[in-house]
Image 1 (cartoon, rainbow, N blue to C red):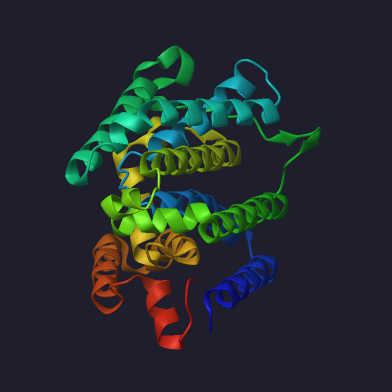
Image 2: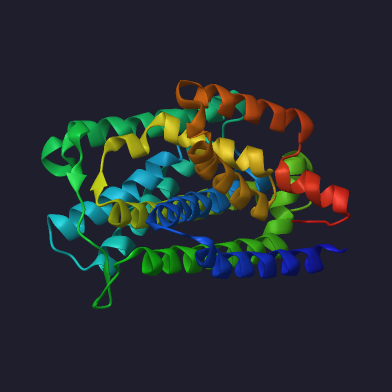
Length: 313
């Protein structure tokens, strides 16, 4: 199956799964798991553009998630802004910060790049913890309910619908970007930046573009998370949250948009099934990840697609 048909099939399957999942939920707990999975998947689809296609590692992406979350929390809660304007302000703030730091950070390579993005994440985390008057510090702060265009977003089904539609739109945009000349240039940069430049590709501009885009996608997901959870702490912008996002992308399959979604769902939902192991659930989760990387080294979706003869999932 060629790449275009594979991606159309993937979109169709995604739409069917998102539409049919609520029919299987027996209580609000599973809605909660699905909504958190969807929010993480939105972040991972954007992060996969940066890591999987542009080949640029980011260990501080939770910073942009936290910026979007706190922008919405502070502007709607303390300053009484409409949720739509607060969300846009979070996007602008995250995008502006990403644009400001992108060129010096993305000029680095390898572990130097990873350390730079880690440093950015640590700075944002420290600021969120220290600005107690604004953010509530380590104890966190309450977040008002989400009201969009005068309509309150209430109830698990409504929240699920909002997150599901958002995930589908972000996935569709990511696939269009990957199939565009920009996406092909990104893959060329990932393969060999020197060769891509020799062919006239402006690799710096492309990497900055994807970095800003992925930051804004993470910011949007952070805004959704803040309003859905109702309470926000700086832990959502800390280093371990960034590592969690990267692990989701790697587990699902780098350079695979649907793989990013699967990785997010697996790492969000799997711990819920492992609670039967009580004190050993984290040991079992770690073992499952190790076995997954051994037997599915390319990631869950790319390996399954290869075995089924599909491409470009």
